[in-house]
Length: 168
Image (cartoon, rainbow, N blue to C red; front, side, top):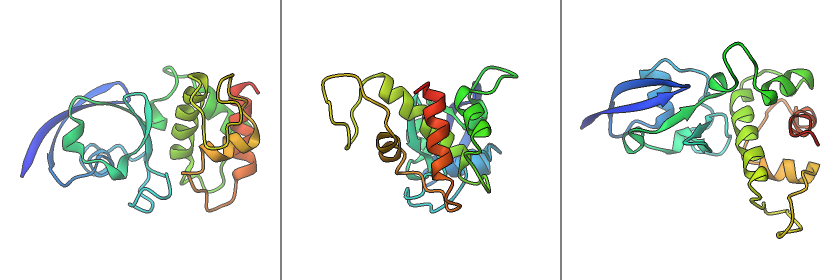
């Protein structure tokens, strides 16, 4: 069974026909040619497919596209203003927060979503003060990005980049 759906991807309204078993990741990559989110584990364990879905970070390999009709999807490519890098993207470049680069788009989307969660005061598993502002320590950054794996081991530079992007 197939359905016609519409998604706004990186600011552009896109119509696509999808089989009801098609994940958002496969719809983006195979049907719309948006290859920025990477296919890693296909089980939601590596985070390389992370996008921002209606403003929140989301593992695109775990959702069926048909259920997301009308949603807004932002990939790492859609961050920042036209011709300008997003501050998190710039920080990843400045702090060498990548090595092979395969996981980088998911890491950047996750970092952008995580920083927004911190700004809104959402606690994590390691947040000590549940009433006050969240202090963005290295432990806090590592916990919040623990769903994104880097097989190259660039974690110290990723933490440095996120800390710099947060102005911490």
